[in-house]
Each structure stands twice: as structure tokens, then as C-alpha cells.
Length: 246
Image (cartoon, helix red, strand yellow):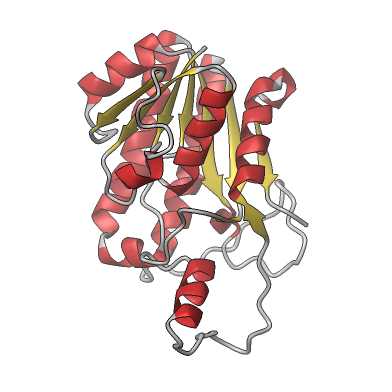
């Protein structure tokens, strides 16, 4: 099978590309290297079934060509990390909203199945410890930029479900919780690598608030296993799944 991974040079995308190659697929990656790195692909960069395109997903002619030639699309490209979102709010909304709209529109044109990577951030200020996919969402004020990411990914979900309901486009949505593992960087505010880096440098580990917060940390290989299984499961089409540990 030929598979496109948007954001494939990123933390999760690079692990997904490895998994797909190991499974015998031909893999196409598009990444603008805004947060992704070529080093993340060092293990597979010379693989005969890997094709890398360094470009933005907002380039419609390139995306048209890529989506036309593949069977499945894993759409992971997004502006992520609190610092990145705070510093670049316009780019965040462009990539997360316009980019996803283009992926879905072209996938519908060529009738290609799509996985949409969403986030636990869409639950916002939800205070319950256990989160169901059907739970209500509680968002913060639009005057705080950090909520731009959560709201943009929420719109992605609405778009994907609309294409499924109206156009019968096969889609699967995965709400990824705190994914951790090799190749993750704390450069954009990711909590675990930030803690590790501070510890290695002998710096204080900063915890905000009262320190009673909890997070669902999940190893990247478990996340990749989950989303590939979801794409292989016909019953998952048109639905949303939390992807994290208990």
C-alpha cells in the first residue's frame, strides 16, 4: 500500500513512517521542517520505499499530486507546542485549519481514507479525571492564544466528521494525549523532555500551580500501534478515539 504521512519528519510522524515501512508499505512524507527534523528520519532516510518532500501542506499542487498517488493519508502535520502557538498564532491557524481542510478536500476528490490526528487539548478545562469521547468541552477565553490550538483541532474534527457524513469520505480521528519517547524535544514547551533536560543540566524542575496535576503519558510506539490499528479497522471509520493510557 502507498501511504502519505503529513508531518512525517516530526516526533510522532517519524516513528509512524518507520512502522509503516516495517509493515511493507511505500511511504511518502511531506514536512516543512518547521518543527520536524531530518535527523528524525536518519534510520530510514535511505530506504528504497521512502519518499520525502520538504514543503508545506498548504501547497495545493504538491498535495494534489501526493494524495492522488497514495491509498491512505495519515494527517499529522500541525503547529504544536504551547510556545510555538503563543509565538506564531497566525501560522498555527493556517496550518491546523487550512491545511486540514485541503487534505480532506483532496482526499475526498480522490476517495482516499484519512486519519486525522487530534488532541486531548480539545477537552479544554474539563475537570474530570476520566474523559469520554462524548464529553462536553470547556474552552478558555479567545483572548488567550494557547486556546487557538485546541479550537483549531476541534474545527479539524468537525470538518472530518462533516466529510464523513455528507461526502461518505472514510476518516478516523484519534485524540492523542501526552505522547512521549525518543526524538521528542522540549523546545516548544513539551513537559517531559523539558523536565529531563532541566534535570540533566542541574537546573530546577519547574512545576506550575500546586503540583497536583496529572497527565496521561503514552509511549510513542504505543500511539503508533494504536493509530495504525484504527486505520486498519473498518468499524472505526467515522468515529473519534482517545489514544492514551489509563
